[in-house]
Image 1 (cartoon, protein in one colour):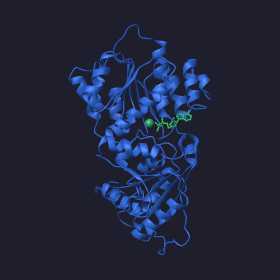
Image 2 (cartoon, rainbow, N blue to C red; image 1 turned 60 degrees about the vertical axis):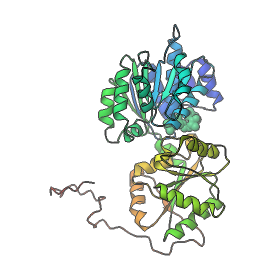
Image 3 (tube, helix red, strand yellow; image 1 turned 135 degrees about the vertical axis):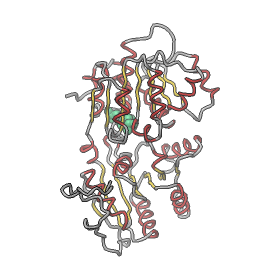
Image 4 (cartoon, rainbow, N blue to C red; image 1 turned 90 degrees about the vertical axis):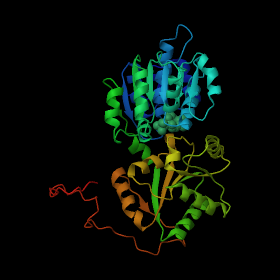
Length: 410
Ligand code: ADP
Ligand code: MG
């Protein structure tokens, strides 16, 4: 079992960069995936959010490029696909930090950037290109990007890419990169619909790695919930949490409308926040994230769509102001706190109708989520109990007598 970076067959210049980044030991996914990737295998890997997947594919790619140095200038040899531009930038930043003691060139090709700006880089030698699928495909179609030299194809957040409808484009990109030697696919989950079929065409006899450090890492997240009687009560609870205990928080809401409403409510009591939502101009998104990252504001409100794949450092609290629709999304959300060994808190503020959801989350995660109270803000209503008798309750899995054909799908 690998416990140190030194055991990973990485060159000294990479080890030094790793040390300078403050990484002390490899995370589970890094220890599992790096040797396989360096061994020339295709890799199909999943690990929860925040467990260091980026370095798990960047490090072997950098090592590979050093082991087989290019003989002459030319186009990219490693292509990393990510679902969003923010993520592409983050991956590129981390790759540059890890490659700081090398001469390797790392570029991004994403939407939201003028063709002009990309024009310069396309002429120069690139070692690694981090790209979003849509924009890259445009370049290929315009014969402005050449995939023939790609030796490694890496897909980050494959589940999100599928969710976002990138499946067909990724398939085409895979065909464009058909001379590659290796393919690595990373995902938070491998369960989503279509991931199986999708990966079949992309990977050749992949080594499947499901790092499950989640138990241990999730342990560092203290989860609890507060019950609210109504909307005003809910807001009062949130304000109390933000002013008394939360240092740096991400608040999740379900829609843009809810986001706008909450923003107004917080601003009216002088709680400054930034926010991100889907379909927001790129510069404003970056701006909002930067303000939060720099500590200019300590509250970030987000919808799930907007928060996909973004690594926001040092979040002390994840607050579910609206419960997510699935337990899986809950896990994605809370994965944003307690990153890489730090402690974190995940608080759900729920109304009566959310009670079944919080219970589902507990079953799914096998974590205990306790109710807590805030002085003077105790709920008046009793905790609702949803009896399993209720017909539409999908929770009861009575396998025995479901012979009836009725489309009783979950
Ligand atoms: P994921 O892609 O799995 O969600 P990231 O690659 O974004 O996770 O990493 C999450 C955070 O953990 C980043 O801030 C990263 O710098 C940090 N990190 C990665 N690997 C390590 C490590 N071995 N030790 C400490 N921190 C790490
Ligand atoms: Mg990631």
